[in-house]
Image (cartoon, rainbow, N blue to C red):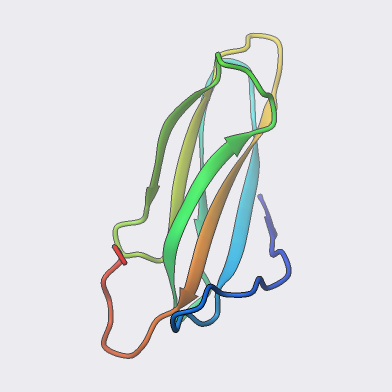
Length: 107
């Protein structure tokens, strides 16, 4: 698993600070259900996320894409239906700083 951290993006106006995106990727073999978790750094909370697959096809199925229950990352799962091809599953977590006393993972 390799973590990539894109450069910090400019946060939308309205008080959101520390806005960043983290990705985690993993190889997904033929005829496999593969999952990857992208985790936020300490002190950050997930505000959104998603999952993608390196092979573009309508046959690929997103099995699940959702925040972790504690709000510290994003879970993504893809089914690779191809019997002769591997691909890469990438999960994206969008996160930001969270003020003291706020611990609602569904912001």
